[in-house]
Picture 1 (cartoon, protein in one colour):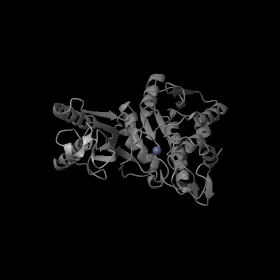
Picture 2 (cartoon, rainbow, N blue to C red):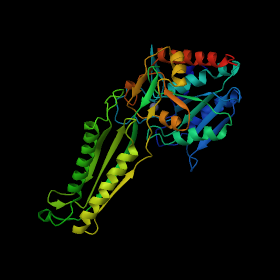
Picture 3 (cartoon, helix red, strand yellow):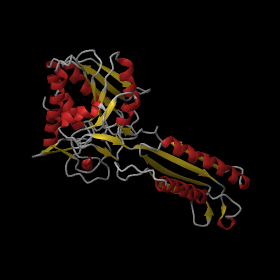
Picture 4 (cartoon, rainbow, N blue to C red):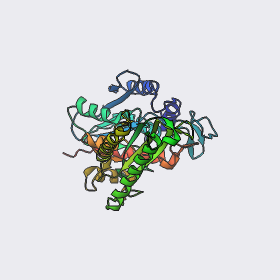
Amino acid sequence: MTAQQILTQLVQFPVLGGQSNLTIIEWIKSYLEKQGVAYHLVPNEEGTKTSLHCRIGPAVDGGVILSGHTDVVPTEGQEWHTNPFELVDKGDKLYARGSCDMKGFIACCLAMLPDMLKADLKKPIYFAFSYDEEIGCLAGDALAQSIVDTYQEKPKFAIIGEPSMLEPVVGQKGIIFCETRIYGSAGHSSRIRNEVSAIHEAARLIMWLEQKMETLYQAGQIDDRFTPNHTSIHIGTIKGGIATNVIADECSFTWDVRNIPSNTIEAIVEEFKAYCSQHEKTLQKRFAGAKIETIELHPAVPTLDTPEDAEVVTLIRRLSGKTKLHTVAYAAEAGQFSNAGFQAVICGPGDIAQAHRANEFVAKGQLEGCLELLGRLIGMFSLDTK
Ligand SMILES: [Zn+2]
């Protein structure tokens, strides 16, 4: 099957982040089975979702992992001109949800499978396909760890095929989503000095977070490889209050941190929690039931910070034919593969500008370029380097 034929199949599975991905994995499994490729599954506890990995080529060290996620973002509220879950060919572009982010890459990997099997590979190529990437890279850690645990011979490299216009990406910001809830005491608005307004306290905490971002920036915590070049802390939603003249006894807000590699999410969240618990004690003097809690909505996604002299950089430069290295501001599983011990880079077909939007597309030229890149990988890995 061609990459376009495979992509036609893959986009028909409307698997959103958070939903069961068993249907699309079933299709991939049967494709692999038909070609005699054994695979391993890494299911979630309930068995409703699973990652998949497999190895093509010899059982030796030094292989490369090709990684992609099977989930996509929702299409609700977006103005699509075509059915988002059907691949529509409009000349030089292919339209569908996930065509770019990132079923296009998975389709290219699968389309090149017969070539990989035919080649006399001296080093193995692994496929690693995950779920729930779009809601916080929930499966990346377990998938990377399963590869470490399953195979005695260790892969050395990981290429994460997120849309990068086939340019090599060596840096990625970390990210976490948090929710902070404040519990105060209700009352007539005139009693504001006697009660604990959850909204007033939320405002204080929000200002603390904004000030934290400012302090890091002013202290020179800057990394010009990224845009923006600093750690950002942002409050995205806030809920609370029932009427103008009623003191709010509950308020909650959600916020995200996107950190540059030299800052850590853990340090920022810990410092905030310490401030909250100290502040909570002060509030409890006025109202014993006052409470502040912060929950992490998903485990922090680690940064990617692959040094320029890493071997994987040499590899991806040769494969892509591009020497300039890039960074991205979006979250991806690359940092997780890097933490598991693989030298990781992001490089895949399509433009991130088209991802997550209405009328998402991938240019056919990008898929062709990706197939050529994988062809070069097969060629390089078939050379006897001994
Ligand atoms: Zn993606």
